[in-house]
Each structure stands twice: as C-alpha cells, then as structure tokens.
Length: 122
Image (cartoon, rainbow, N blue to C red; front, side, top):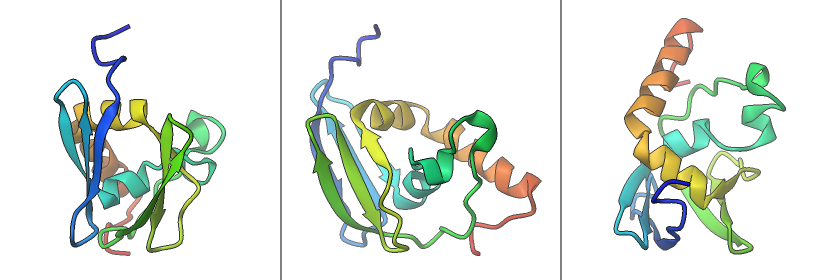
C-alpha cells in the first residue's frame, strides 16, 4: 500500500469553461485534469474494452467538455461529457493515478493517435 491509498478527494471542481476538472485530496495533493484526457482514458467498457488488447483509441475530443458530475456511492463519480459519453466510473484511485502520471498518460495517448493516423481534432 502506498502513502496515497488512504487519501480521499476533498474537492472536485469543474472549471468555468468546463474543460478542466480539479481533484484535490485530503493529503494535500491536487491535480488539474483536462476533460479531453478524462474522456479519452475513460474507465468505461466503451473505451477500455474488456481487456488491454480491446482498448479503443478515441480521436476528435480536443474540444470536449464536462457537463455534469454524478456521485457513485462513496468511491467514484460518473462524468457526463458534452458528446454524450457517461458510462465511465472514475474512482478516487483513477484520479490519483492519472494525476500522478498525467504527462506519461498524455504522451501515450498522443503517440497512439499518431501511430494510428488519428487526430485530436476529429
């Protein structure tokens, strides 16, 4: 167990332009996560498939925004995006790990797009 496993979110705040979600934790960490990154890495079957070899590279989400946050028990939140996607359950662990590794996750996404001839624009 690492030192962040016990941390709980103390804040979930959507920016005024709806393109960024700030997640603050009780241990003092805070991450500003772009809506685009959350959408393309959504922990949903639609994006992740049912195994690593089924994960889908989602293009064309550069301008996606967050329209709603819906609590799911005391362990996650469902994010509703303006493109209609709303099936991902974003756990506190997901936010923590994504925030800690955001640059690497983002670089991996951009490399996937490039490797498949896809674009953030469409």
